[in-house]
Every structure is written in structure tokens, then in C-alpha cells.
Amino acid sequence: MSLIKRLLILIAVVVVILGVLNLFTYEVIKVDWLSFMEIQPSFRPMEKPLPVPENSIPVEGAAYIPGMGAPVNPVQADGVSIERGRLLYDVNCALCHGADGKGAGSVAPFLQNQPADLTTESVQTGSDGAVFMVISNGSPGRMPALNENLTVRDRWDVVNYVRTFGP
Image: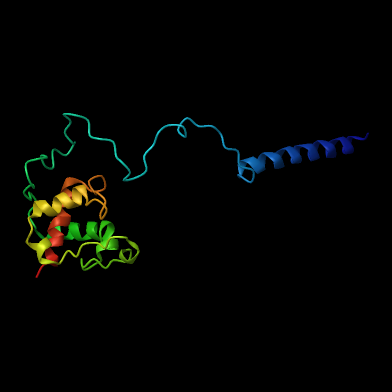
């Protein structure tokens, strides 16, 4: 065999090997490799979060003490707090409660239980701490707890913004 034929055969073999490797590299042929992360128990977001360890205090300090009633709002409802609350409300709450807080957000028609109307007298005359507790712990079957999504300060800012929906 001539040198050119040998070179062409070598090039053809290399091209075939690289072509097969590219099939695996670009996931044309997907190989499911065993990973220890796959066989560990895991939790989806907002699905049965692990309980807080006993006698622990959150990094930001305790937001409220269970069994002691609703907390008192420590954040003054100034322009900065209300603007922060508006931004956080738009991201976390407006999809369900709507931009005006009347419970007619873009997702509301698809929910089994309709979101609360935040402009009603019962919400507006309730204490800030009661609204804070609902934001923090949610409402079973109606609203998820947002204590993992929003810091304590963020939740108080949202409470201050919700107060602007009143008359």
C-alpha cells in the first residue's frame, strides 16, 4: 500500500472516532451517568421544608415568637419602605393578587381558591402583624409561605405597601 492510502485510512479512522465522541459530547446520544446527588432525598421548592433546628435563631434575629401573638411592625412606613414593598409585591404577590391588590392577578383564574382581596376592610383594619404572619406562614390551601423567599425586612416592607391599598 502506498503512503497516501495509509494516510487516508488513518484520517478516516480518526474522523470516525471523533464523530462518535461528538455524539456523546453534544448529547445526541445521552448517557445517564450515576450521580450520588440523584439518589439522595431532596425537596422541591415550598414542599415540606425541613423544620428549624431546636433552640436556633435566624441570622436576622427572631421575626416573631410563636404563641406570643402577632408582632408589631418595626419598620416605619416611609417612602423608601413603601417603594421597596411595591417592588417586592410586584415580583412575589402581583401574579395572584393583582397590581391593585383586588385578587385578580394574571394567575388567579387558574387557581383552585381565589386570592384574597387586599383592599377589603378586614385586611386593611387588621394589624400589621397579622398581615406579616400571613405573608410569612401563608394560608393552608390558599397561599404559600413566603418566609423563605423574603427576608424579615422585605416582609415588613410588603406589609407597608399593602396598607396603601386602603381608602
